[in-house]
Structure formats: C-alpha cells, structure tokens
Length: 422
Image (cartoon, rainbow, N blue to C red; front, side, top):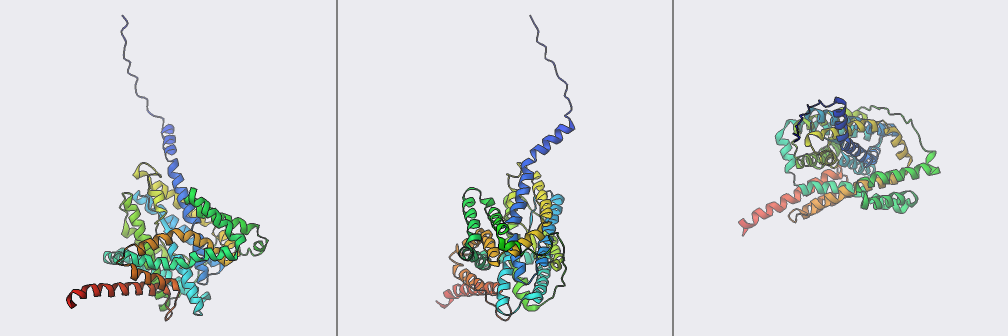
C-alpha cells in the first residue's frame, strides 16, 4: 500500500516587483478615470471660460493667461487635497461663473461700459468673490445661509445665465452653417452613443473646420507658448454687486454645494471648510492673472469618485490626483487653444459653449420648475436674469435673484396672512 504523504510547500515571499506590477495593473482603470475626468472637464468648457473673459474685455494674451492660471490652480489644489485626505476631491473652474461673465459682459456693452477698464473691474470682482468664499469657509452660519436659498430660485438664476449662451448654438447653425453644423451633428450622434465625449468631439470638429478654413489661418495671432499676464484689479461697487456677488452665489450653489452632494452620495465626507478656504484663497491669488474662480467639481466629480474609478473607495483618490496632474499639463496649451478660438467668429465660440452648457441648462430648468410652490417666483427669476438688463450699473443676475426671492417672500406672506384675515 502506498501511503500518500502530504507535503507542505513552504511559503515563498512574493516578489516585490510582481506585487508592484499587480498594483499598477489594478490601477489601470483608476488612471484611466483620472485622464477622462481631466479631458472631459477641460475640453467641455474651456471655450466658455475664454468667451467669458473676452466678454469682460480681456485681450487674447489675458484670456490665455486666465485659462492657464485656472488650469494650474485647480490641478494643484486637486492634487493637494486628494493626497492629503486620501479622497477623490476634484477641483474645477466655475463654468457657471464663466457663463455669468458672458451675460454681464453683454449687459455692460449695451450700457456703454467694458474694455480694459471693464476687465480690471472684473478682476476685482473675481478677487472679492474668492474672499467671500474664504469667509464662508470660516463661517458655518454663512454656509448654512447659502444652503437655505431655495434651490429652485438659485437654479432659475443659473438657467437665466446659461440660456442666452445656449441660444447662440441655434444662431450659429443658421448664420455659420459651414462651421457650426458639423459640430452640432457630431454632438447629436455622440450624445446617443458616447455622451461623455459628445462635447469634446464637437469642439474638435469645430477646431478641424477652423484649421481647414482659409479665412481662419491668417488670423492666428499671438504666441503659442504659455505666459502669465498680470493686470492690477480695480474695485468698483457696481461691479461687485452685479458680478462679484452673483459669481460667489452661483459658484457656491451650483458648484460647491452640488460637488459636496456628489461626494457624499458616494460615501465621502469631504473637508468642506478647508476646501472652501483653499479654493477661495487660490481664486483671489489668481484673479490678477485672469483666474475666474475654482471650486468643488460637480459634474466631473462623479467620474473620479464612482466605483468605475476603483472598486476600493480608499483608492479612488488616485484618479483625482491623476486628473489634477493632467489639468496642469493641459494648461500649457492654453495659449494655442485661445489663439485658435479667438481666430474663430465669436458666434461660433459661443455656439460651441452653448452645446457644452445644454445639460446644465436642462438640469437647472428641471430644478427651477419642478416644485409648484416655487414655480412662479423661479420663472420670474429666470426671465429677469435671461433678459440681460442692467439697472443702476448692476447686472441681471443680481436682479433675477432679488426678484425671485422677493416674489417668494410675498407669496409666503400671503399664505401666512390669509388664515388671520379669514
């Protein structure tokens, strides 16, 4: 009889090189998620940033400087916060804030303002909006006060800011069909099969059309190397009311609060006060160079914080860190991107920006009009903001918020007083 002997094979220590290879292989989707986050975040809205800066009087070099400083600031901030707290804390520029610049710039142009002086006043508004964000990080009560602004009213103001830009997509399709229609067609097709890439692909299509257009090539001006251009900000009370306050509110309501909600939805509790103070300080420091505002990412935050980035929530911070590093690299191409966009007809730039903002407009309108209790006040806020009016030098965004909150207060007063009168 053969006695089967159970041999115990001694455990062999795993090769460190093999372990490292397995870790890197497992992080492949994580790095991929970070790359997608940065590419989508940058390409889907940098046209809005450039259009906004140009609307308030920035030159080509100043607009390129603003895009560069925003890319570097949000990239570095995302890396620092993600590594420090081991969370996928994604930082982005304020796309609604850039859209606000377009509407404010149009209102100032109608009122006879703008130009270099208008740009300096806008920089002062950027700096003050950053300081307000820092103060919000210090003050818990101020954060809760912002959160108490009814979501339908703030969403209606945001929709009013975005709607005029989205309308430019239709205008561009009619007035510049050779350049705009191919971009719109790509956006429509990819919107059904690869929605995440619809806007970047439509922008690339518009770029290709511009590069092949003989009328564009001769208008490419300025250097293509990244440069920072500093301009001394100027503080103007009317600009602070019409731009700084709405920029602060729209960034807090539609970016910071939304980004915090996204992270909490994926099980994270981000360091809110630290991020608010850090991004607010960075906004103020970047203002002289054209930086609008940086904040919690809202839409792209889900790309780095979702299970698609990594099965282990404790490893997803690598995706946000990767995105931050790529943001810095993408910023190095700010001058070239700005030169190409500025060589394009302004209507085409705003048309492509309108395509990028359509999802945000749809979400804002849904939030604004979903609850019947707020529908009338929200509609008034939307109409007032979208009108682009300027009263006493103060832009439409401020008046839209004031009208919405005022009508809401009247409605609540009536509802409270009715039983007593009866």
